[in-house]
Length: 198
Ligand SMILES: [Ca+2]
Ligand SMILES: [Ca+2]
Image 1 (spheres, rainbow, N blue to C red):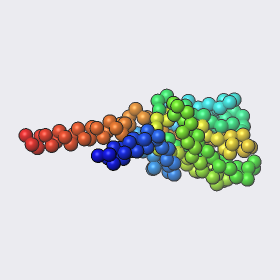
Image 2 (image 1 turned 135 degrees about the horizontal axis):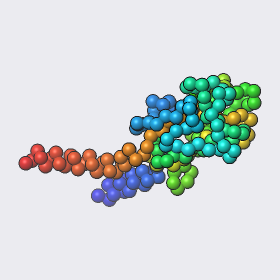
Image 3 (image 1 turned 30 degrees about the vertical axis):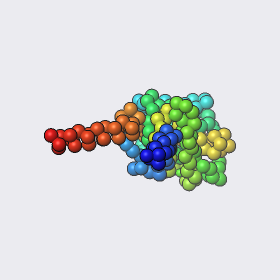
């Protein structure tokens, strides 16, 4: 009994600590459904707000877009892009670009992840320096994420406009809490057992 109690305590401690796991492709993100912002008509869309120190804009000029003809970038450079969600999310991703050899010999694109209590983790990808929005940066989280920040290098040491396309994210409200789900599953099993007995 003591061993079971210790194991249970360890499991609870691990789950309450939470985890952010990098997603290498959009197919790794789960669960859906997802909202997608392609920046073709406006800077973003319902569900998220995009900001930078001196503001953001859509642009056809910051590298080859991932979709359509426009991306989202900042009014001045270099400035990180902050994405704040209307409702917390547990899965998020974007395509980044303008990784132009004109102005950098190489950098890591970093995504800083925050929940309501502060910083959670950073996921990173080394830019392939071809100007195109052809690399994905994303994650799945056991915590309810409230905002993320995209930064090239430190956010101020890469002489390029930060630029993103086809942002996608889910809504944590549609994702059952693990404890609730497990309770629901065990209750269902108990109900089935009772019915079989009767
Ligand atoms: Ca686009
Ligand atoms: Ca690229």
